[in-house]
Amino acid sequence: MNVLALEFPPVNHLFDWPSILFEDTPFALNKVGLTYLFAMVITILIFWLAGAKKNMVPRGIQHVAESGVSFVEESVVMQTIGPEGKKFMPFLTTMFFFIFFSNITEVIPFWQFPANSRMAMPITLALLVWVIYNFQGVKHQGALGYLKNSLFPPGVPVALYIIVTPIEFVSTFVVRPFSLAIRLWANMVAGHLLLVTFAILSATMAAAGGIGWLGAIALSFPMLVLMTGFEILVSVLQAFIFTILTAVYIGGSMHPEH
Amino acid sequence: MLNVLAETAPGEMLEGLKAIGAGLGYGLAAIGPGIGIGTVVGNAISAMARQPESAGMVRTTMFLGIAFTEALALIGFVVFILLLP
Image (cartoon, rainbow over all chains, first blue to last red; front, top):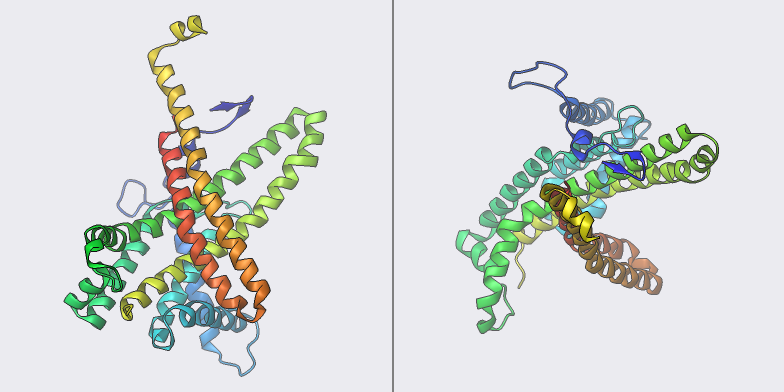
């Protein structure tokens, strides 16, 4: 695409990566796969190292792990599921850190690619969440009770069930996993596109020389720095929102509304 | 104007219309969620200002509200990406 004499690459080129290792096998690995491996390894390492040596007064890596765990406990689990949601702590904490580390590669210099801007992992996690909250609903309310509570919400006039039940069915069992996945994925795509746009703008203006160079220093490069800071916030926020929505769905199927 | 239209190939015309449609679609999809998120955050701020001790709970609920509202804008964004020539 050619926008105002800027050479902007086609959108596909920003997200399609060639295989690096094991080409033409089912185990082919590209930058996206490497990023997920990095996120997985660093999540395991943090909790492994923090758990290996238990000091009374947490220091260093133990401090990171403990504040992460208590953050998930206080602002995610206790606010949405309650004390009985403590058994989901390992799952939710791991998911928070994994999503966070695969998002934050968006702003790591020379890497600069958020792995969650490819749909594969968000939809896998969302389908996993779908299985878990349906399983919890059936376990805590019985299959019939779960269907009754989620399809026929109490407190609605009987005649309105003609409208409410199909809406509830679509929104609870069909749309939920997709909206969960699309929220994470689209935020990461948008952030990556934003950073790429400002980076290309800065580079082109700086290369033009003269007044363009001044414009790059004064306008587009500070904007790029600002947007990088904003994307750090978005990475944390999206990991948090994915985790808290998971907790809300699990909590909703564990104790039905009365 | 008509001369230009007559000279362009039908394929190009289609691409141009697609680009216009994508831009308009995303712009329209952003209006509602923009107003919605404004309402959510505005009310959350006034709740926090009235009762600072409940700020933690209000903030969590605010993020939930934002997440649900934002989904519509994001679906618009996805359509924009899909329509892009």
